[in-house]
Image 1 (cartoon, one colour):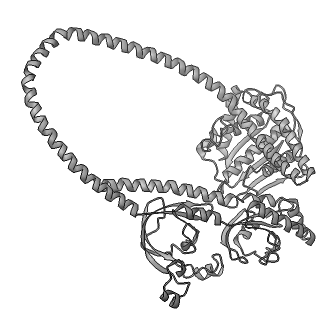
Image 2 (cartoon, one colour; image 1 turned 135 degrees about the horizontal axis):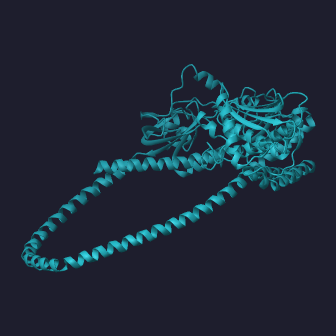
Image 3 (cartoon, helix red, strand yellow; image 1 turned 90 degrees about the vertical axis):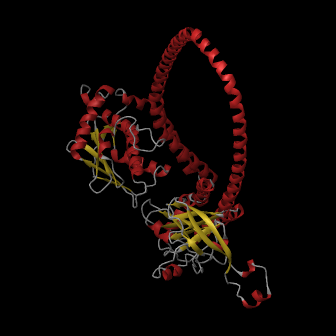
Length: 635
């Protein structure tokens, strides 16, 4: 019984630990993301772009004051700009003794990440301030492509540490080297949970990532740290960072240095862990095993007392039962005889009542089934109509709504800064997107018939550039490496400009989603002349398309994304739009990884009696079967 309770309690403690660990994990992620927007926003600020182009001392002085105020208002520890060589040009701490201005930090990993075009994340001690913090960097490109420097924000996590310490839980976070960088116990910080290899230890210490910390091992006396989701058991010696944590004695005050570490005892913990893959960190929650031991002991005492009480009750009940059986045995014979006579006389009546009850129940079930079927039929019809109407509209207006929100937020910031020209351009773009939303409902007719649209001669390169700019400005993708190549003297094609941009944005977004978690993600767009048509090819180096999914790729409501992340209408709408232009669209996997979508557009208008120009739900299936056959041959 005690062992059963112990196992049950152990499962409860493990589950409770995982729940608490998830809360701490969310709390840490929120603290790390608190200032992530700052370097990204400042990288496109005109003052920073001007300073990156020309290192004017007067401009640098104004930027210093601006960064100082921004750091004070946002709560960031430090904000600074480094040129393309890694030398600090402007910093929020320009007026302090530990100013970063003139210091070169090009050796820091966060600068190297920014130089590669990535948003850098790095935890380390400051070289100048010797204060630990979390660094976030972002590349600065004055012309949109050339690396001109990096914008860095350093945020300290002291407020988070104070909250964790007051919470009373034992929580710690280790980095990629197994070093404790964040902990609710200050004395555990900058200890290691694994023994650093001898060949790496001098390099790690020389990098001053952990300041002057000697990187001693955590005082593990038994057990081991969990590496996955399993529950681990380990014993740690409690330590004090210095003897000031202990009551003073003449011997300690006289003979022992203040930097000594003193073992105070041992505590056995139940350990659960969780990974933070983005940073390469791991979080641990340690629960004192004494809680489990006390609970098991209490359960054993209660089980023993319950056993004694239960045995006494069973004895009393057996005694009373014996007496009652003797009395009932005498009365039972006469009752059985009387009951036999009653059963004989009522048998026919009970049989008749049973048949009548069965018929009533059967009729009631039939009526209930009929009403349920009618209700389900009506509800199915309602949901089918509502699904067809709302799914397309929700998908189509999502892109312009996101862009309008981003332009509106940026316009407010530019107005607040007095930059009326840029704000007016944003408001003009909002007006254009609003006009586009007015035409969105007409695009949904592409599923049923060819709409009466204003096809005209369109410059494909110009529309593709607009689509790429809209993606980058609205932040719809984390892939900044989009390469656009085109042949010279491209001839215009017959299309509707807004719908063509809609197709390009949809395909670019899909390519960006396919590159999630891909290092050096890249989207390659190429526009070239074919035999009698214009070819637009969008390639990515993502995860590619499963062969079984290729024939169904342009079906309505087919999607490979998780539930809630997509309706499965984007490619189907693109298919209908391109067909309405008299063109084709097809997809295939690339030999070296990734996927490729090719669009063929006509230079001349489609004749009115041409079957390609009459796109409808009846001939859409036949048309898509032909395109699917082409896809299968190519892949």
